[in-house]
Figure: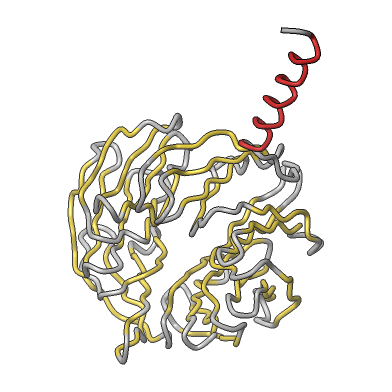
Length: 324
């Protein structure tokens, strides 16, 4: 083989390698970031949480439906029901680190607090898949048909898997990797928050047809007993808790409700068009408005909108990464 032919082959190799593993604009570790997962447009948009400036937009070009950050804030995972793998990206470089081949059906994800273990809700296998930090499956725990909400307690000893279709939730002992209790929840339950100090699990819901969900259902963390319900019309689907209380996003009424720690409603604000996600950081609330393609920033203390940030098409989920 002559030298010219060899160089042509090498150039083709590097071009093909670059196409197979695209690199996106980096997001510096030092920046506090709000991340919007724009599922309709298959993009991920990054915002500086302090200034509101757009840092980058990644064109993923894969039908992802959700994502999660590693506890150290350095790695972004993207998954989707119709994808056969999970994509792991390094934020600081914008590069694809690795693909974990899981098969189709992943509908939720949550890391352990120490980042050594990942939990994935698998609708194809009707299970929670437990994976180590290298992507190896170490356990498969049978739950319902659609475990769309996964919540981990503060010390990582309990995982709560709330099923969207099967009207049940499962309490999983993480160390023993087994389901220790199941309890009934309303059909189409979605979203929740673990409130360890109060010993409560707040569960939201979507409802269906002419029976939309109007209430938050409050359960005992220990045994799953229903303790009470709290009105939050209509369709409370996402939660954020701060030292000012619990903020609940009801996407059917385009409303964020503020509740005291005891569950008393103390405020509300109308937000967006068909909002699906809420996060809180630095005294602000961030709400993803799906139909209007924007993040609405709300002052947590006054419950007044501060800004609107334009996202990609169809922001369905938000993630927060604190700067270093």
